[in-house]
Amino acid sequence: MNQFCVFLSQGFHHILDPNGYDHILFLFAICAIYSIQDWKHLLWIVTSFTIAHSITLALSVLNIINLDGAVIEFLIAFTIFFTCIENLFLPRLHNYRVLFSGFFGLIHGLGFSRLLKELFMGMEFNVLTTLLPFNLGLECGQLVIISVIMFLLFLTEKHIKLSPKLINYIISVPVLLQSIQWLWERKFWQP
Image (cartoon, one colour):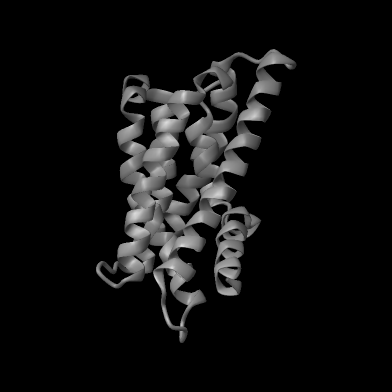
């Protein structure tokens, strides 16, 4: 049980780690176009993302798939970039966000797997005491982040009286600029 708690805690703290804020910004970008009334739709989006990243997390940790870390980091930055572009310029694609978030979850799962592989390096791997609790920790942390984001969006819309469109721009433009910087920094090919 001790190992279960350790990996649960590691997953939870990994997702909340301010040094790895790319995933937090991705969640901000995902939530930027929604209000609290859209919670059911947002739940489907988060579920799609969760299922997908759980699959690639497991496949990667079990060494069934293995991609270069530099490629994964670049693709994670691209998922953030694309989500912001969609928020700002491609409203017709919003209806397909469940599909996009699922696909992007596959990419993020590969990123999460790198940390998990480092954590149990040299240890005996057990799905129930390492992979499952780490993934549950990620999900708990992700739910905390999304809850805080949606609460902040609710307060901003209801009490500061900003329009949903303006809130989207306030979130998406800076996150887009950060993702462009990451795309440049994380490029895995030589110019």
